[in-house]
Length: 69
Image (cartoon, rainbow, N blue to C red):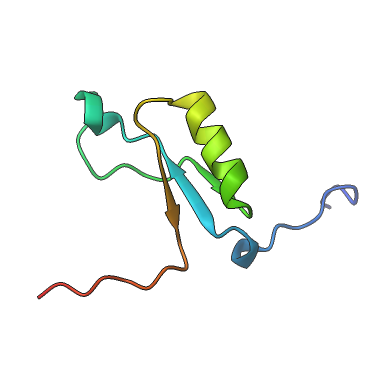
């Protein structure tokens, strides 16, 4: 039985994804996976800047998708 003190996460709440983008310094090859999800954009940026100050990116998961042809 789950711990009653912990709320079940609602995935739709987490709009902002933080990527470390290690490929920017030749430490991996794409695609990078999101390493953290946040409900608040400012918190996502603070976290990214704290963990990976020179390479992180924050992506809005609800932004309209670009159409490429």
